[in-house]
Length: 389
Image (cartoon, rainbow, N blue to C red; front, side, top):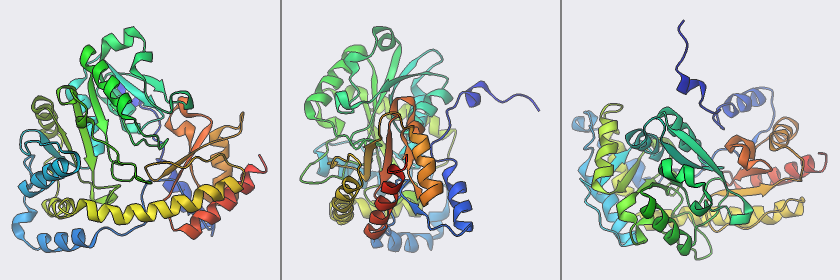
């Protein structure tokens, strides 16, 4: 067999790749596993999504190719959401494009923009597709650690001038996975100004925009003057509407950038199943009402879990957004060691900081994706691990 491509060989390990198999092995052994790993909430999908999908699937026309145009109703519903939620009007046919979840859109935008030798600025920790998508596009990922010193914000002014000159794009994600950090408006303003000056495209990954608490309202990058010229924003129905497996999202931005993304997608997929798009359109027309119900439940879980972890000896701040808690570990304790002990000794799945890159060492992530009693049991078990390491 011939050698695999160099880009495959240089792909980093995917943080979630091994966990399902390990979890399956433990369950088969009779271990009571509490999964706090994946950001995949246990709430049911909205009834309107299920009902709309069921009706649409009975229409033979809805089983045909979607192509890149997709379902006009979905494009228009997504554009309507952008205008209602952020006050930003976009042409649903020229400045917005349906995606099989935001993940593939992020990777394919990178292919549309990055040439060999070009740099993409990648936050570490960050969603694995930022790094992996850059490698698959034959670009050079420049990893920038997100640390408590900067409140987990990627400060472009601190990136070396050589990397800035070579950079084609930067990945930003606020509210942030995994740190749960949020971006103040002044941060977004100076970042947009910097990227305008240096002609760097911002890939703004915004799937947690509606999973916010305590009156905090997360923005769109397009609320910042100048962002229309250099940003593409990615949205998803996965997190706000608990439709992770449905694989539906959209990208929105300047016509030229959306056209480039669509051109790549023409060669790699033939569109999203039309009944799924119909379901997404129905949900987006009632987005605020539907998401608020899920957010209340996430907040209840957050408010139970933060003090429970603190009681077990963990330093745990109360996040303003996302479904995650990002917790520091005692100095000198490798996150992978803690994750392995948590899994094998007490049956709790977490994600170690090292899974998000070397810059995230010293932390681990918990997802608020299971019922409160199980979360509290998980906190108690993790405390027992902490007491013995």
